[in-house]
Length: 289
Length: 271
Image (cartoon, rainbow over all chains, first blue to last red; front, side, top):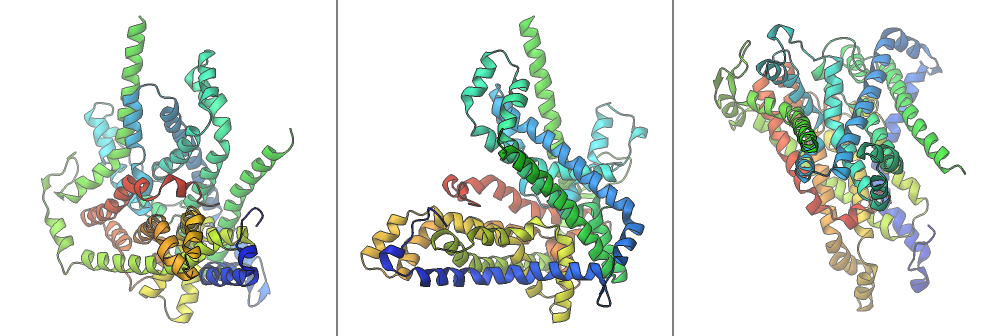
């Protein structure tokens, strides 16, 4: 590694130090190889082969049975990411540019609560909160905002999106607020002094400087949402559902590893799509302008 | 006029904040209500009878929940010990020693988090089944360790990188062996960051559902699995109480993380 001061000149033990470093890091790498790389190869082989020869049969079956769920999964995850981004921008923007210290203080104390709450707990919370007779509908009825007969259950795709946004917004907002706090205040003050509204300062001056952080947080959230099994299982039991539930069902009901792994490869491709979008933007940023 | 507009804006801001608080706290409040509701059915907006009957049921020494809590904590402790045993040497190598392909190794630890995990876990379960360890505590600990390793390795590396090198050199100059310098100077100074990573791994393990769902069933029932079974069985009270038990450490950690993870360590994570 360039620029890393080393002890080699002092002690002349560069070779043995390199060996020691590899020795120290190997046990951790072995675990990752055994529990991630090896199962990953397993899933690829299982998805693309039948009796030892190459086949796309499992993908055909996966598309035939679950194409609706594939669209459903992508729509849910993309919508959740978009809403999470919006909510996080509003929160982080208020924290950075807010002028009323009571509002900023209250928001700061509140917004992080769901940060480390496990998805399964969030799912249980939402199962009760968003039900037909849950606290949300009951509160609306009590406040006179809604007639009791209008109450509907939100425990379907809307419930999944609500749970994802509820759970992921603090994470994205935390990273975004951190990035916003470290940009040059003088530019923002200058914008304000020239008469720009706070909204305009946020959108035109502040956000472009922290876009990279926002995108990293969103790509991580995207993959997380794509991996969560408990939320679609618990919040929305009915069809259509997300691919994670379909995979669990293929295994538990039929022991059908081949189709489950084909679905798994499709989820890899969906998350790779998000990563590529992110990388392409990163590259276009670095291109000479 | 200006004052009127200003107070109208104030009222608008305050009501938006109240709506935000409702959305944020409402779901947790609903959970708390369910945990003390002995009877609650429509059209009642609040529980019909309150009581601690279900709490007593859950906390009865012979109850399922206490057994699950024991299993969960035992698995989390083993996971932390295992993850630290792997990540302290790895973190030191990444932070301090000359390591070829360092960026690649850093990435290797991140990969398990960067892939949709269900597809990996179903194959891990299949491999474990062939090895005959599916449904054992060992299987769950292994899966949780691989999952938590990115946090423990990256935070340990950041913690070691934040320790002043001159202090180590001073110890060496006074005749301490490399091993002695490590154990008396470097490790104690990096300890707060390493403890933070341990807490992080502990919580990740306590909260983990998907991996346990595939490699732990049916013998290993952790709290998240008990919560899932109770919720799917329609027992909202036990599900809510279990959820509250899981909620407490998560919220405490959220409130105190900044004490454990100092800014100078946090700034070095992932570099």
